[in-house]
Length: 433
Image 1 (cartoon, one colour):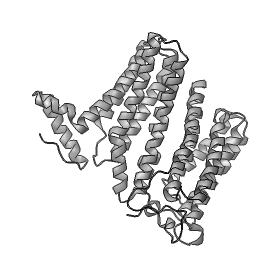
Image 2 (tube, rainbow, N blue to C red):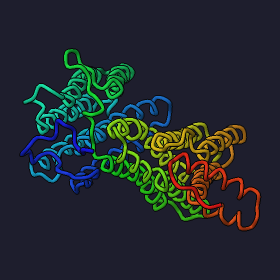
Image 3 (cartoon, one colour):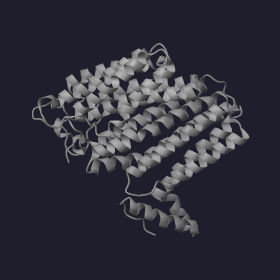
């Protein structure tokens, strides 16, 4: 299976990736590029902390979607162009500058920096798509104008971004930008249909699946890193009392458990699935472009909850903290379970994640009715993530199930049958009983 779309395979082109097999290595310039989005994620989480209400949450969600689209489309672009080529490196450097302007405007995007944010975002999306289309040779052929179609969709949404940036009223700005994000979110679903040009096909989106999976996994690391940074920075400013030490440990263990939930099974299996799929571009769209949105959003919300817990560990749980924590758990577990469902052969969602969502719901109801100390409630969320991680680890790898079987426990035998059924559904060999 080819790693680049037909539009990128033209003789003599040194700007496109020249890869063999099904994996394209992540370039160092791509890792350098991600540093800008470390800053962007920090801006988003701090902005939500400063505006912890429904309006602030909606504004942060819209800005997060813009940041995600800017990053993920650049990831698709570097899947097709060679990031080690000098010309492409210079271009990615320009993309980094525009992305840095975009990230710098985030705190005041719904105030005085709205036009700056809109211009930077539209320039980034249109300019990058035009450049990649030129590199792939689409301007000189009459077939396969996939990237031209993508560019036209960004051209269609750009006036909405600019009108919103010029609008003084924050509510009107949200409406204009919501319309722009709606257009851009629907583009991949409709295969970027354009009058007279038609729409793209799955064959136009041939990608190196391993590259896409690795890049998205690295973005998860970026988001988890924000939680670690917040935990360390906030703890460093506090007096090391027993509550703050416990809050520090709880926050870190929560980040570690979330890492385990995503990377122990999901990341590796997702990479294998997209590498061997008949249409890796469709998997890249569904599992990685769309369903990583709630995963990353959930991690960011939990990072905000980390700081709130460290700052006020003994205060009773209040509504804002409850919603932030509940939203983070629901988005992360729901997004991860759907991602794993798409990238496996099993028709069922992971039961560990389903039970985890039920436990999260029970935890929220308990917190709403009893208003326990923030630290105690947050410890419940960490235990929920740890429960999901250990259940899936035991079910997938079979370690603790084998020990239960050796002791003759009926639960071990029952779980063994269930595990073999799950492995058979995923096309993996069964474990001996």
